[in-house]
Length: 261
Image 1 (cartoon, rainbow, N blue to C red):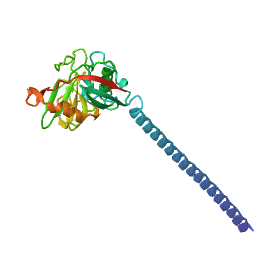
Image 2: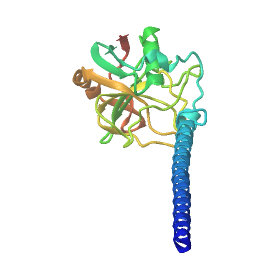
Image 3: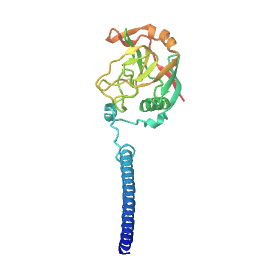
Image 4: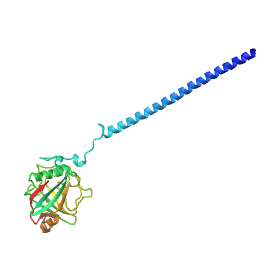
């Protein structure tokens, strides 16, 4: 009977050992599973934090207080207005329509207040204030590469108004080509802040090389009447002043009326 009891005891002890081994394995498995789950949660949380930090950084440097301040163009940085120059807002960033009457020739015009708000604001104000009425068109350029009529001088000699000037240069063509019908602002050479009351009308495609300040501000176009201006003024030719192709119109030309809306 003794060997039988020993066998039973050994079998019982073996079963107990198996139970303890199984229990330890189950505990270890649960701990391992929990550790893997915790690590996964930690990794996910880290990814969320990294993503949030990245988004915050992008926002800060594009839309938030760390956004870079746009650098003004060379012309804008150099702009110094003189006199009662209206703000660009006067142009309302829209298209304006109106008429310029040179002698008896009526020119229909359009001004682009979106592309040249500062210059268009000035031009609109000059019309509204009656500045242009009675001013002459003192300069005519006739050459193979240029055809323009310049108007708006304070005293009819081409002199600028020392009490009124503004910048910057706006909407200048990148290729230096001012196409037929263009209305653009005249200015002094190499001075982006010397726009004033004077403007020129292009009646044949004209190339005007940019200088150190840039090109010339294009404010709009003549939409009707340019052909009549050709026959009444341009075909009359010029008296040379600045060269064979640059001078005063042989047909005295005055702005007799100007309207805008």
